Length: 229
Image (cartoon, rainbow, N blue to C red; front, side, top):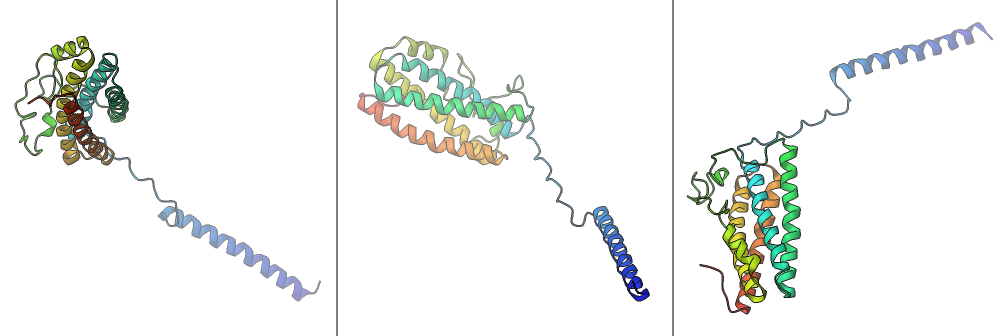
């Protein structure tokens, strides 16, 4: 090999080594500065506090839904009317699933599933239209009814003892009251809650239960009855 060719080969080899060193140095600097690095993961959203609207709604609507599920199972065994049984099944299935979501969020947020002792029902709704910071507008829990719209123990016993048309009418009246209370609570969360998924769930409850209120009014009329005053 000629001396010139040897020198050219050595120059090319040296250039490759030098270029590699430059690239390695640039990569090191870029890494140190964060240039070209994968973006850092976004911080996890902050969990709601125990006294937030999100937590209050999840706790209390889970209790509210549980009674609706119980009433639906009771009437299923007290009538053979397919329309009432179908409605009861839909309510039980929907509200059991929603209750599971609400309790799951409380677990995820590491928050208690029961309200602090002495807290007014629906105190989390302070500031919602018509509630002005006074919980459930002066509602006092009584005879097992813990929130507006919930049936009392006495009413649940009556439902369990009724048969046929009497059971159908009582169920529709009690569930109408229950839905009206539930809609008020869900409207409160749709306005006050901060977690987007929970706000969407609450608005879905409002829309679905209003539709069922119309349906139940028609079913009561077919049976010569009406919602309770």
